[in-house]
Image (spheres, rainbow, N blue to C red):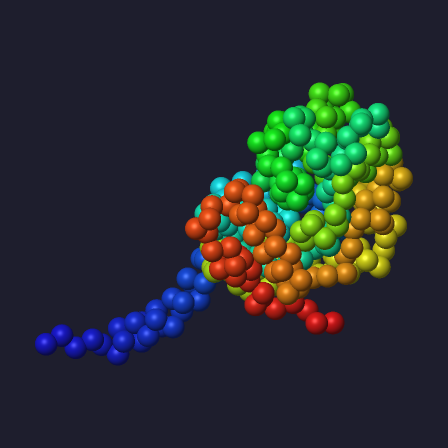
Length: 324
């Protein structure tokens, strides 16, 4: 019978002892890909001040920034694995989850009124019912799209009663100003710019139907790197608190990125953006659920989908956040 030598046993024990450490080191990501967006002001401060870079420098983890032009783009990037963290509206994240996008919602970066239905200054459209038979610019898979669907439903209409013109947000605004469409499901800061510079009218507003600004993470990334996700959220918190305490710097950074005038930026950041929330709790769940049930009633979500169960599967409120 083979009897291992004392040296062989020691070598085996050393291998067993150090293998998990080596495996952990090998499994640590070499980079974290995260989005920034003009509809997420906190992300601009986060990027501008290099807070994530400072946090992960000692780990040798590179931070890769990707701009999202809308929730739909952030969700596309998440689904493709191009980013690990993405900024969206809560309702958009829910629809994506229903459609098989493997994401978890883990953080609130804002409570916005970032969407309304907009028409040109000389338009005779004054209420949602006036949209029947009209061309409406909209970005599919975003909060403005969901806002439009819900507004039509409340007015006794559906998207079949209008002609949707599918454009990204900035292009939708441009189409409205040119007169190529009759109305636009708007998004700030483009919406604020259209108001101030072009006299556009927000003819239908409903702040409570704007779902929250939510940060999402790829489900596999969260599963593989729970501590890293916790650290990312802690840094996000630092940026959110800094944004609250330093409005002039937030505004300056926003202007540097968007090249928009102060009046437009103040309208978005001062009048229609609240940054005093961080945890996903009952208000966020209820808002996302209400949007999902309305979309199901409108036929956008299939009748057989358990919307509440999907909301529960989407939200992960167990990642710890700093308490101070």
